[in-house]
Length: 321
Image (cartoon, rainbow, N blue to C red; front, top):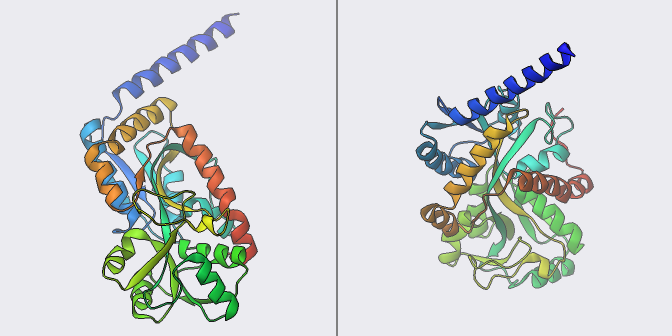
């Protein structure tokens, strides 16, 4: 009986200590690891949210870029950090494709990290050179079927969204298209505008100047429904039902981070992304702020992993040793 009482007392003391810890959190700067290079969308998004969190939490929220190995190096660094709320992880949509792309990851995507909140999401766009004859997805498919292998699609790395969208497109449309690889998206867009390649799936902000300048033409976006941020633009799924994909950024913490801290961070993140000036900045880039619950992010991640698994397997893409 005494042993039981001692255990109960210890549990109560531990719980009280945890609650007290969460109530005083944070007492020092917080680091957010971005497993991508500076200047990319994940990095820009994270820095914008970090600036808002710095104001609301009363401690500096610092961004540290750890790129490499398809965003797995920085992710592993976060996984191996102390689960005390002082190291967080901000990931791009590659976080959901890496489990299928890599032969072996050094971490468990679903179990080694705790979801905090989905920050933003938005579609990519299927664009063609302005002189390319197709004015719609259906016309692009017709051209590709009439002249197999003639339509040149720009892609970047094997695991990039541009490559995965292209793989999904050619399988769902049942067309033979030519893949033209590039080391970076910027070079691919320049060649697309110059007519060296015909088409590409790309982030909308990347091609907005070319669309406005009349050098590229948007055919469709990849979200499940049309967006007010791209008025009049159809979706790919209107021609190829089930063709859906979005770019997104989300915050995670190492597994076993106290739930009280996760709840505090979630509250502040939701507050941050709902600031009018923050929402406006993302909307100008055709991205929608979300500010999901932790549970919603968990479901989102699981759905995204399944969404891309078959495309990656069918394409035979494997990264790593």
